[in-house]
Length: 120
Image (cartoon, rainbow, N blue to C red; front, side):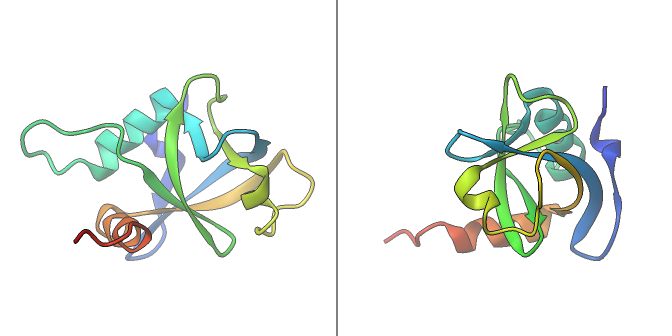
């Protein structure tokens, strides 16, 4: 089983990993549920009280940032991307092994807050 160690330090804001990228008919980008929980726990948890393990990870594929959720049935080491989103990336001939950037916790929170509409 591949764990959070599939990512290594890359920059101040990102980890670097390699995942198989494949098209998906789902509405959002997903990875193996168990890997999602492990990465969330190891890299995103703040270690204060009860932590959620379903918070989306934020991955960058080419120039596109994706909130990534866990899903049963996605093979380990695979990033399943909705076809319409995959078309906006530089991924050619999927499924293919690609470099993927995983936003670090603070960067991910920033990107997710920008993607959500402001509350009134």
